[in-house]
Image 1 (cartoon, helix red, strand yellow):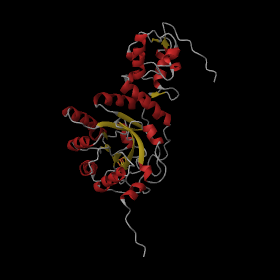
Image 2 (spheres, protein in one colour):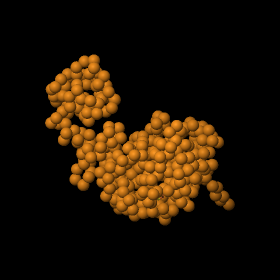
Image 3 (tube, rainbow, N blue to C red):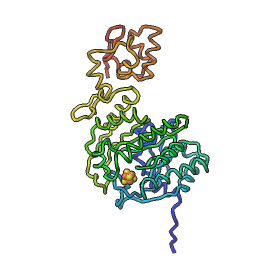
Image 4 (cartoon, rainbow, N blue to C red):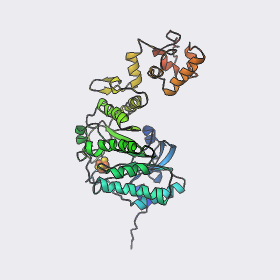
Length: 384
Ligand code: SF4
C-alpha cells in the first residue's frame, strides 16, 4: 500500500520557492532579482538582500499562497487552478526560520501572504509568526513583514515593533489605476491610509525603535505613467517618511486577466529607480524631472543627464563656487562626491579634469556640464 505522507515545512517552502520572485525585500531590488537562485530547491526562496543591517541571505516566503482576492496580475488570485496552494502555521514558519538560521543558511526573513478570511485575520498570522520568531527563538536578525490591506492600528503598531521593515504595497498610483489592476483593493482606505498611519505611529512613539516603511508599484500594465508613479512617490517620501518605493515591472502570468498584456521594459523600472533617488536623496521636486510626451521619462538617457542636457549644457556649473545642492545637479556627482569636491577646493584650486579623477569614478561624465577655473574643461576624445 502506498502511504502518502504530508510534506515537511521545508518541503512546502521548496514547493512555493518562487512565490515571492517579484517582491523585493531590501534596498537593491534590481540586484535582488538577479541574485535569486534558480535551483528549484530551498535555496530558491533565499535571496541575497541589501538591508539596513548589510547584505545578507534572507528567507522570502508566504504564510499561504491561497487568496480570496482576484488581483488581475497575481499568480495567487482566487480561482487560478495552476497555482499550488500551500499554507503554513505561524509555528511552522517560525520554526523553519530558526532551523535555517541555525544552519547558517539565512540571516533574515521576508514574510508575505495571500489573504484568507480578510486582511485582519491574515495579518494576525504574520504577526503571530514574528512574535514566535522574536520571543520563542529570540531571533535578532532582519525581519521584513508585509502589511495586509485594511489591517488595524494595533496590528500595524505591533508589526512595526517586531520588524525592521514593513511594506504596504499600493500596487498603483491612483484609485482608477488600482481598479484596473486589483478591483477588490481600496486605494485610500486599505492602502494609502496605512502608510500614513505608520508615519503617525512613528510620530506618536518617537523613542521607540520601529520598522521603516516601503511600498511597491506594479508598473506598466494599465497605462500608469511615470509622472503618476513619481508624483505619489515624492509625496510619500515627504509625508509618510518612506524608506523606499519599489517599481516592479509588470510580467504577464498565464491564466490571469492580464496574461496577454506585454511585459514592461526593465529599462523603465531602472529609470524610475534613478528618478526616485533624485526625489528621495537629492531633494528634487517631481516637476523638475524631465518628463516627455504623456508624462514618461526617456528610456535612452538617465533622468539626471536628460535634465542636465536641457539645463546645464549651455550654462555649466562652476565647481569652485557652486553650493552642495548645485554640485549634486551635475551627472556623476552624488552627495559623497559633492562633499569631496567641497573639501578638495578648500585646499587647492580645481583647474583640470585630471584632479577630479581622485574625487569621483567617471569625471568625464561631468565635463560637459561644469566649469573649472571659469573655463570648460578640455575633454579628451575617446579613441574606443
Ligand atoms: S491580495 Fe495579494 S496575493 Fe491576493 S490576489 Fe491580490 S496581490 Fe495576489
